[in-house]
Image (cartoon, rainbow, N blue to C red):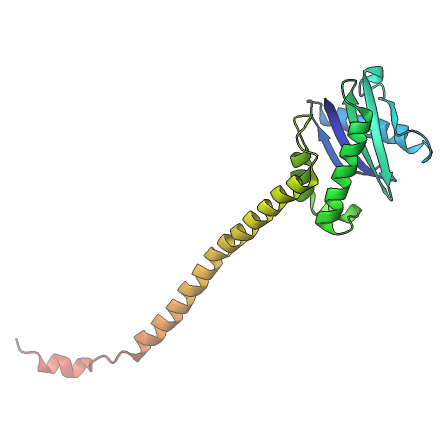
Length: 193
């Protein structure tokens, strides 16, 4: 089972963190810091697997990571997960992000955090791998994008309605000005009691 998915930059700033077990925010921050120190001090030419730190579960857990440009993608998993399978999952996640954001960078993770979480939830939910087929993932992302575009049209509907009412009010006020009222003093004289 996957215990946590962490993405942080070369300076240890977390850009994505998803924990699949309950941990306090303070403990999550300590785990992120410890994981960064474990992963960042390793050379690029060494193995991408290492034992989890003391906070993450020690020898019972493994940290499996990839370093792309300025970002570290780290999956903390228990001993039942395949290291090569998780490396492949990291590759699928990065390629999916790359295709969705057209050459993904750190800023995409910052400014599109909702979309990044949506993509991650298509891959992993509750610590279990759901999908690794990129075609299926892109189909779901396209469906989500269509829904967002439809909702954007609906979201603009209230603004269009307000604009229409304002135009109606302007036209109505002009129509009221154009109404010819009879001369009141003459109308009173014409009244017979």
